[in-house]
Length: 115
Length: 115
Image 1: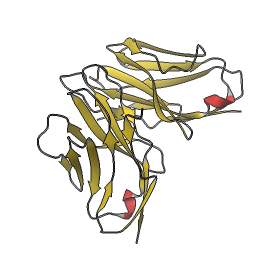
Image 2: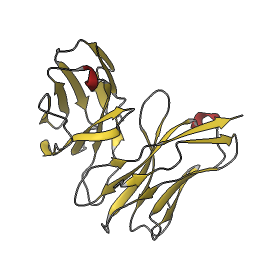
Image 3: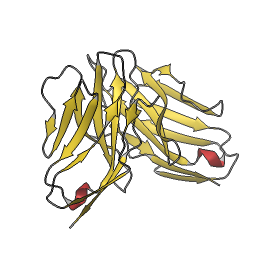
């Protein structure tokens, strides 16, 4: 069974608009971490934001926020005020701690920001 | 601060040749991870080390792949003999090992092409 599901292979958004990238996860562990990474066309993997399973507040990092709904097992990434430079692949990942240090990645969503 | 350093950035080799990929983790990080990214399989963990000790190598495809971490500041991933299906981007990542699921920071990747 897929542990991380990203159902949107591609998304389009106009510059300055907000966009939500979906991520659902599957785990029976109580302790886990959820991560979002950005991969631009240059290929590097850039860490964006982290949410711990016990964090009561949704994580925010600048224009990025994570809409964490634990009961629904979803961890959607919200990008506010999109910029052309946000065009990239976005990966959701989970780390089930303390059983393992492995990161399990979703298949990614390709975001295209247009003027 | 220097990030994760990988070399070479690009490698083109012929089938049957030995390939060695190198990684220098972020100073002070205790955990090191090797990932492979392909279009077909996405991002998959090959092996990871904690304090230079291999913890989980279940993702290593077959005996042609081997990884070592002789000290805290250096790791290698070796493919011998290489095959065209090994063509992929290989990422090294590192993270501190503390309480809780720590963020993994990725290197720029090595793009390997086996002809």
